[in-house]
Each structure stands twice: as structure tokens, then as C-alpha cells.
Image (cartoon, rainbow over all chains, first blue to last red; front, side):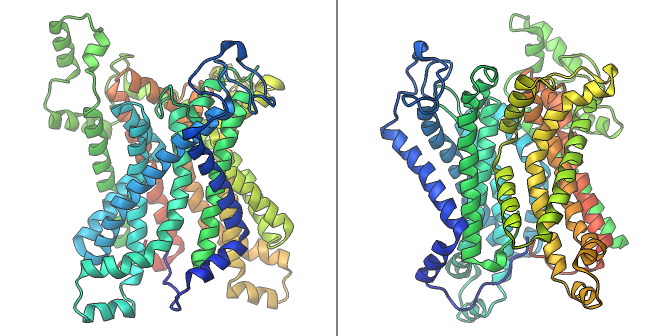
Length: 290
Length: 320
């Protein structure tokens, strides 16, 4: 991905906010994301029904006023399960993005600052990781270390590292030749200090945009892993596993598959719109169709 | 050009070599002894030791890695611990499901995406363009396995047009085989089509802004003929690149989709092999998929170099 240099005239937060609230993609994305995050947070203190208690008499009920999304084969309320599932998906994807940023950004920035063999070695290691289809490797890692949310986080997080390393390196390389960096060097600042004080703050926008994209990919990856039984484990509900359980009941209870799937679609759509909106708002020249 | 080619080939070989070591090392730390799993937990220690010796599991790690990798180079993938047949035979059988599935998905995705992308670009800025782009956003957000479940419900359970899962084999005829692969292929193709149509549209719009397009228009050519005669050919370069990368992605995507439709392809094979601790099968399938991705990346790079001579002569550090 090519990285352009940044606008010279600094924008105030007020300018950015004004632009953001005029951007439809950003607004819709933000509203959807806030709703999903609120649902996840509320589920810690309240859900319409318990997601652990089973009520066989209420099993496979179609959507109604009592059970908005219907009930599953154990009589559990699907809406409540979708709420609790949201926090698992969000937690896994968010921590995986965190891993990518915390490890990838220092590596990428360091490579850009040092250059030479280290830089070349880093880029070639990135190529090796990129050669592994993410899904295949995530399946391999969770299969090796055992299924579960923590291993799913590690499996998804590992693939975020080269993404952020490459992004940080590209951004840092475009910032290093600029005048204010030269001024900092003349002032006697070392490479590490310049990176922390000047390079990193200047790539924050890019990281925010990429973070949103990786977050949405993480939600999809977690759902895929849980669907094949390698992600979040029972009794905690997860959107992917709900779909797995729904598969054998598609012919008589399609609602069991429809609602968890819609939850994934809406969340990913919201995050993608938010990412697109942020990109437009924070740096229109980085606009790129995905 | 020769320098560029040699450099790319050396890097590709190095990447493949490192990837093979990573795969081998990862699978070495899998808990569970394949010999014990094959004989069952009641087997005597002697019998397990004997089987370990037969399978070569008692040899030092570097020797086992070398045996595996040198075998791979001559097409000998070893013998499956659980099926007791050559791994190459197992992979060969499964490829007859996974490869046609990935190809079919690629064809479908391209057949949908390119016309949609062109149409959207030709209506740039209109409500039609915005609506199409909104649909593609939706396509990207839909997990393929969920879409697969929905297609099963509509086309297999409700309309009963195609089977809900399984694969009868190609011996029963091409039509029957294709009927079993069509839903999985559609499910795989949808998100890819959404991405590819966005790429096609944006590549076309980029090209349409070039000076030579303006010249062609100034020469008196209609917008339509400029689009078809000049813009499309140039815009297809990034589209072809993405298509190459998507094929590798589709091949990996079959891992989950084959499980939705109970298709006996590479994806199911790798899942079964992981649960049975059939390490040699897992290693071989993973290295095969990874090698495919690496080689496709190489082809894409080389195609770029042929098309854009600036890349061949580029010096210094790139920002990508």
C-alpha cells in the first residue's frame, strides 16, 4: 500500500469532528458500532433471559414479542445469546488488533529507522507470514494449542502483526525525509526519540483506520473459528458456534441461523463503514477502494 | 530483467524454505503421539515404540525434516499414519473436489464482478453507482459460511434444486458433480465478487482520469468506445492481480466451506488429519497450500514486471 505524506497545515480536532459528522459512512458506521458495543456492555449486567439456564419446554420457539429472535434447541433466548456473543466477538477481535499494534508498530517503525539488513529481514519475514492463508494458519494454531477464545486471539493476533509492521514501516519511511524530522535530528535527537515523539503521533490516523479494518476482519475470523469448533467454547455463547449449532436445524428452525449471522453482518458492515468514513475524514488522499 | 527475475526466484525459494520449517516446527509441538493414537491407549509400550520406529518418529528432528523435505521435492509426501496410503494419493483424490470448487468460485466471482464493476464505473457518481457500492459493502461483510447456510436453506431445503451436501464423485457424471459444487462455489464467490467489483470499478475510474483518455475523448471518441477500447484493457492489470491472489484465498476458503457442505476435499482432509494427529498429512496439505500462495504471488509479481518496466529497474527502498 502506498502511503502519502501528510497535510502540512495541521487540523484541529474541531475541524476533524465537523468533517466526520458530515460524512455519512462515518456516521452510520459509528452508530452501528456503538449499538453493538452497548449491547455487549449491557449483557454484562442484564440480558432479557438467562443464557445458561435451559428451558426445554420453550425450545425452538419462533420469534415473538416474548423472545424477539426466538429460542434455540435448548430453549435459550437467541436475542440474549446474541448480546452475550457480541462481547466474545468484540473481545477476541479487539485484543487481536491490540496484539498487532503493540508488536507490529514498534517492529515496523524500528525497521524504517534502522534500514539495512534488519529492514530487509523484517520485510522477508513478513512475506513468509503473508504466504500462510490466515484462515488455514488460524485453524492450525487453534488445533495445535487447543480450541478456545485465548488461542483464537493469538491465532488472529499473529496475522495482525505483519499488517501493522508493514503499515508502520511504510508510514515511517514517508515521514522520515520531512523537514520537521530533519530539524529534530539537527537538534540532536536520537532515532528512538524521534520515532516516539514525531513519527508515531504522525501515523496515528493510519493506525486508527487500519485498526478498524483489522477489527472487522477479526470478527469474521473469530466467527469462522467458532463455527468449526475452534473458537469460544461452551457454555459461553458465540455467534460462530450458534451458527454451527443451527446448521442441523436449518429445515425446521431457520431463525437459529438467521439472527447470529445477521449480527455478524451488521457488526462487520458497521466497522467497515466506520473505517471508510475515518479514512475519508482523517486523510482523503489515502482513500482506497477495498 | 534477468537480475529482477533471479532476485524474485531466490526470495521465493527462501520464503518456501522458511515456511516449510515453520510448518514442520509448529506440528512438532502438537500434543499427542501419532503412534499411540494409531494403536490406541491400551497398546503396549513395546508396540508403540516399534511403530514409532517404523514411522521414523524416533529419528532426530533435523533428519526427519530433511527426509520430509527431500521427499516433497520429488513428489513423495510419505504415507498417511491413519489411512496407510501414500499422502500424494490422498491429496490427489481430494484435489479433484477442492480445485474445481476453487476454479468454479473464481469463474463465478469474475463473471459477476467485472460486469458489475464496469457498469458501476460507467455510472460513476449516480444513484445506481452508490447502490451497487452499498451492495458490495454488504457482500464483503457477509461471512461465507453463513451465506452457505442460507443458500442451503433456500435452494436445497426449500426449493430442493440441489443437494444440501456431500459429493457423489465425478464418476456419476459432470452434471451431478457440478450440482454438488454449485452452492459451495456461490458461497465462496460472493465476498470475493464484492471485493473484485470494487477493485474493477476503482481501477477503471483511475484509468479514466488519465491524460491519454482525455486525448482519446478530445479526438472525438465516444465515452463508450473510450471505456471499451482504451480504459478497460489498462484497468484489467490490477484486476488480474487481485484475481490471482483471490484464487489462493479461495483455495484456503474451502477449508470452512467444505465443512458446511460435507465435501471430501482438502479442507475436510486437513480437519480430519488434525483430529487424528495424522501429522504427515497436515504438513503436506499446509505446505501445498502455502506453496500455491507463494507461487501465485511470484506470478503476480512477474506479470507486473512484464507490464510495468519501471518495477524491473526500481532501485532503493520501496514504501510497501
